[in-house]
View: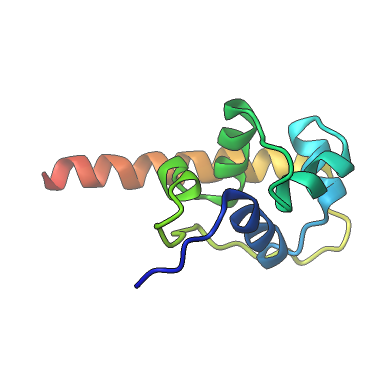
Length: 111
């Protein structure tokens, strides 16, 4: 049986695995750090555009993020610097978006 995990808890888990702070995530999607904190506690919800940005950043499918019964499949990345800025996150997001698109094309070709 798969444990039902909320979107907020999934976001927190992905953020922590990536060793990113709430402030970095907040700056990346254009919200306040306290809003990210509330989202991770399931007190607030991110809009669809912000969720899409996070999916690209973390290399996961939107369906995996919003479906409480789904385990997360992600593109893993490791940072070698403690000073990752917003520009770096944008670049990582774009690269992950390409990787996700390639995965989706491969799935389509298999069908």
